[in-house]
Image (tube, rainbow, N blue to C red; front, top):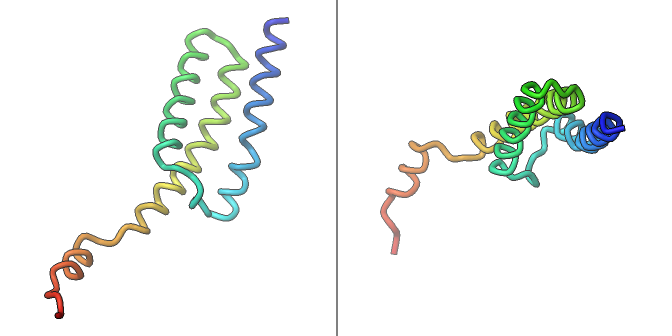
Amino acid sequence: MIDFIGTLAAVLTTLSFVPQAILVIRTRRTEGISLTMYAMFTTGVAAWLVYGISLGAMPIIIANAVTLALASIILTIKTRSVLRAQPSAQGATAATSAPIAS
């Protein structure tokens, strides 16, 4: 019974994450996603995966392996989006060091 509950929890939590992952993968839109949150989330899922492996608990291993793959893809897309949105250091320097007209 305990394994059934663990498997049910793993399936439900992993499946609940899939629609968001599909949306981000298809659209590449991440404006509403926090980079810090996804970095922390992905790290936490990786830790859960290590924990599951150390216990030999297949529900934890499978759910977190799938979630880690999806979260890593989203984190990569978000990171690229943030990096593209930042002005280059050279462009920012030129723009901010121009004299102010009075």
